[in-house]
Length: 407
Image 1: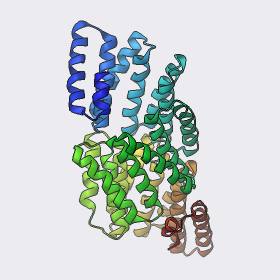
Image 2: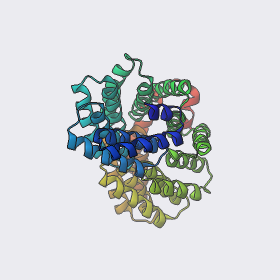
Image 3: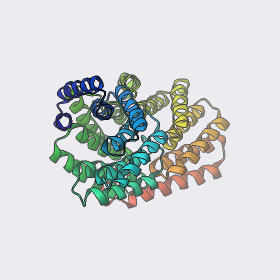
């Protein structure tokens, strides 16, 4: 309890010191249940700080002990849950979902509504396209189930995260209006709780929506706020994504001098095993070299992204990798190869239902068809892109939010 108190008050050094002492005592006395409990809590503290490689190591040992002892209490419930969180950030959402489902079954068996809500929430996060499998329809369903429990029980810790994820999923499916409402509500809860990592997640989420609406100044301001909060804490939690997003905001606003920032985000993600967040830097680097007219370099990053996404069964990231591969081949004059890559991107994006991504891929296919001299196919793809754009715009009533896509 004291370790968790330190964690929630963001006294992470004190939490690690205390929990390490408890772990030493538990190992010395042979209390394996206490060992598993201490390992879980140490893992969560390191996860909060962005040290995912260390977190995963602790959680894997906790799960091994829980299974050996066949624990069915909270120590058993939390062990696979913690490992699921580490696996998700490591870019293994399918494996993460297996752990969350195992923890969910244990929680339901003993009527632990807090962990029931949290596991449903994390199944939602593992279904998002930015860090998970890209099944947005399922993500919405999981978040709704989680919210029905957390809001009734006044579990604000869980409500904040589920509201944020729900908003991201709604926006991806085309309802940016409701997406903004949900994320703003999540941000209000995070501000009330005063938890740095939650605030950084919410400003990153809001920034993502502004970015997808081509409102780059607003997006950059939010991503900078989150980035600077983490830098003051000297934590790397969510840092690679925030740093990559800020660089992408600047790049799309015309500043192509962002390579160093994207490479730093890439390196932090790799060093801390934050592969899910690191992939955003790969996207950014592929796009940067397209904008610079260096397609060979863009191919390198696009293919790396596609390979990692394929291994993790991450459909949105796979679509992004194939999209940027197609853009690179188009610049190289390989129209057949570009079309093949872009059609593969369209297939993966179609499985996610993400409107903005579909719009971008149809636009690229239109340019590819035009380069081949097929005006009819180009017109067809432009119409498909416009259909996606209209769906997004129709969800927005604030003229300021509509402005970016109306330019």
